[in-house]
Image (cartoon, rainbow, N blue to C red; front, side, top):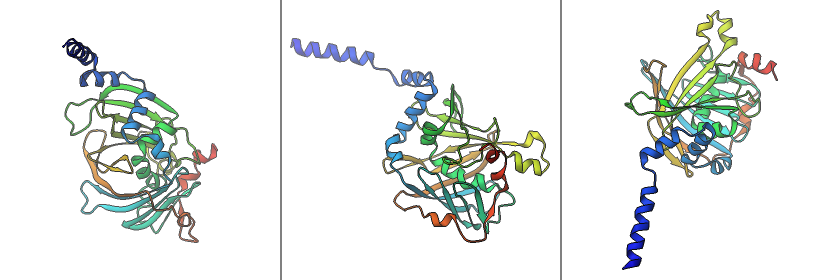
Amino acid sequence: MSKIITAMIVYVVLSACEATPEQASASFCDSDAQSAVASMVEAHGGIGAWRELKSIYVEREHHFAGTAEPIRFNIHGEYPSHRIFQSWQAPAGTLAWDGERAWSADWPLAGQLMPRYVAGIGFYLVNMPWLVFQDASGLESKGCTGELPGHGDSKYLVIEAEYEPDPVRKPAWFEGPRDHYDLYVDPDSHRLSGVMQHWSYAGRLDSAGAPASMRAISQLVVPESYVEVNGMIWPEAYSAYTPEGEVAAQGRFFDYDFSRPFDERLLFPDDKRSFDPDTSSSYFRRH
């Protein structure tokens, strides 16, 4: 009987010492940025499994608000070089980041969108937890101060991530000090729950005569569902919002495949390539 009583006392003491969910969330909100990012990576399957990947293939649909049909394309990326090839079905065309320059071929949106941005942003969105852990040159925690559209009054840990341009490991779309990501991390699940993208295109917008106030663009992407593939957690359905909280687009990533080899021959077609002029701008002059 005395052993049973002793065991019960130990259980009560240990239970009293365990942090409640509220205490655990508060502790996460107070953690430093690097520790929070490490927890986020673990919540998405860990860094070890991701570093074993050789390639990624995923389909994407992106439906801009106010348009009749979504755009549809697939993303094929290579690890660890991060070279990327996209084949578009609607509208038809191809674009890529070949490790040195971004280019498009028979892509009707080349005059409206920057191929160097479009070629990489889907790849970077789905890989964001791991890329931030591995490649970000600057991390700063803003505490649990962030809110997401459609998620009520829930607070999220906001981590500001910046990158130093690297011509080998990532596409060259970072041009100025305002280019960065704000990550919204769930303090309970530790999953990445939103990404605010801030980017600028000084070269292209200068040539268009745009005022300085228009040379930076921001967009918030919020995953609405996730899928587990190869033991890792990847975004599935998502919504994109303006900084004012208005829906800009909705979309989904689907049919993830990590067994399809990356075919580098796709990156070097003999003709029809149109190189993005921005990829020879200030970024490459610095390297």
